[in-house]
Image: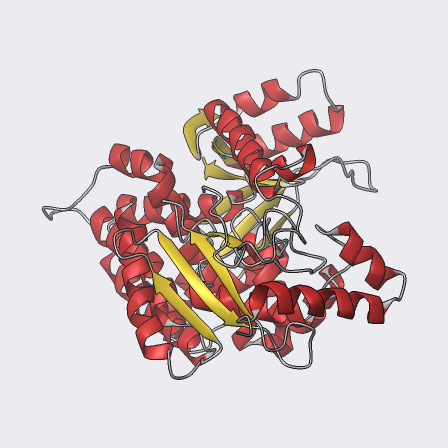
Length: 157
Length: 301
């Protein structure tokens, strides 16, 4: 418990330093609970998520950093490796390939990379995975873009 | 984690999406549940074998194979010519690192070898530099390094913080402390492999079809990933500690006689100490028994 708190505090300081370096990631710690974080990440360019801002929720376990944080998309996203309803993310580093060398910040980076490079062979969103697996890139992109517009972009007045 | 409604999930989008809280069965059974189930199974296993067991006579190993392969029983007899006891470790994928941890610290405790402590501290410092050069952020690994160095100081007697052999056993069985030291070794191993990636690359290609970096990220750094000769070579080299691995398997010799093979991992001398200490360090005092898929600690006669 103490170890995880100390580690998270170091990450907090690192996040303050990294702010300028990584403008695509805005990682914020809950005011009253260092085990709860949220992040706003920018959809990578040249993907259907471009122009969107996606919110992630982090719940950090007491055994952190020996165990990975739980991360979910709060913003709806159409992506083969994100559960459409719960926002759960299928990413190896958040499961069995986790190691303490990762940080909340680098997890955000990995999620952005996953957005740009979906892995349709291990889908959490089968509809999305099937579109890609059947080669319907256009269909996938238009669905993904539609949800980006609906859920991840500011509404036009 | 509670399922907070997304701020963007407002009136305008709602007609588009299926209602959020109303999850179907599969939605409820997510990866988190699977991970929880996994840790429940691990906890169940944990009750059976502690991270580090008690020292047992070699006969307990024999008892295990009473109704098993006669070759193994023969080999255990041969093993008994040189070794007196075994200390089992939990088979959780970390057994090599855990065996090494205990065996090394126990050796320092027993021999009160301050010279060795100073030597390895310098090596640990180098490993830390290696990781930083490779681009690892110091705060991601420093806590693990600090705990190992702390334990190293504790096993040297005559200080307020000194610990007895019993305490060493207890601390090695404590989940958080034990896992932190295992993680320290994983960082050290990963750093060494990446530092000498040209040397390790062909071995890694033989094990898995990945790059050196991917191998370290997926098969060295994550807890519970089993160790192979690549890990052992790297750890032995990085810390300059020779390791003997004694192999106990069903393979028999062509000439009919039964013998037990062992392999000594002798660290490369990158910073050549004087010849006498070199010869001294070349006799492994870390002796591990390998049975396919698992490492335990061996004690000589």
